[in-house]
Figure 1 (cartoon, rainbow over the protein chains, first blue to last red):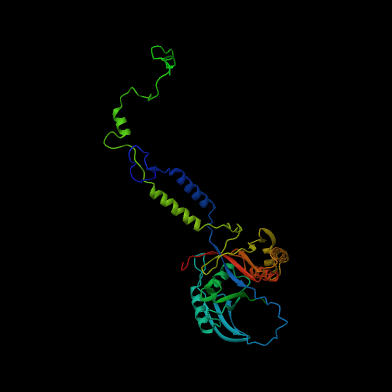
Figure 2 (tube, rainbow over the protein chains, first blue to last red):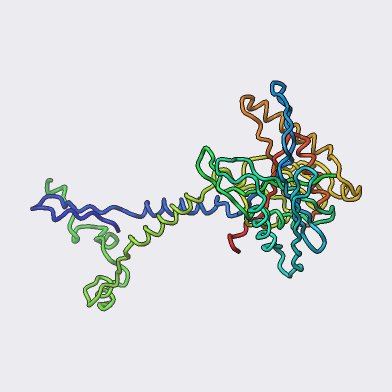
Length: 185
Length: 195
């Protein structure tokens, strides 16, 4: 067992070497490990943000001034391809089509090429780039009512792959450049 | 001690045949000297081996520290057993918010029934789900009563099964927004980066 050696005891005095019984200490560690293992949370669930774009009530003290509408990315999920359409109000600024990869055997859908194309598009047309700018560019997802949710999440994952540094009160943070909402007719 | 207080000698003790001096009894008469030598360490090497516990205690302490670091006091977030979540890579940590579970048949708010998925699919168009709207609105009002000085965050988390059609997702999304939850998050399984 564990002990503390502080040299030989002199003469007939009591020995200065003391043995510490380690068994209760090991018992305590074992009990702590058992408790922590039993109560441990192993599930790794996370979340992906979306925004319903509900307008707040207008401020009666402020005079309303007409503003130029921001550029918005309209992401259309088609049968065979994706369309990335930048619109400023009703005006189409640019349109790019990305072919959809054929569905594989893997249960997890990934659209890596779409993510790369979205990044290139944001580099060209994105409005909010400065780290002090906390506002994110808006993306509107247009999808058929039959599209399974896993495909929506795969597109959202590609949309949120591009990130930029944003200065927040609690330090710099890498945030997705887009905020998604659904197109509702 | 006087002479009469002394224990009687063996010759005068009437119980001498039953009371013996303490000591080894079992197989004492059999001279298994080699066994005694081995056990007592009088032979070449002692049969008792001292284990070094330092490394063992180090291992235990490391395990305890790791488990304490990864310990979550908020507990496990319950996921509806009928919901199979999709997986994604670019995700954020879960926050404490009302949970809306959407499986192939039902819509549940924190375990309470709040609508039917089948009914929305059969109707074939987007709609406001009244039960869901009422439950979420009640939750929002309760939150405001409990914390009157704080701004309402308006966040709710949707646990949607990966095969549920977009029509249902959009209906639930819109209903949550109408009920005062414009910041809707989707719960997903976390994929490792670059995986």
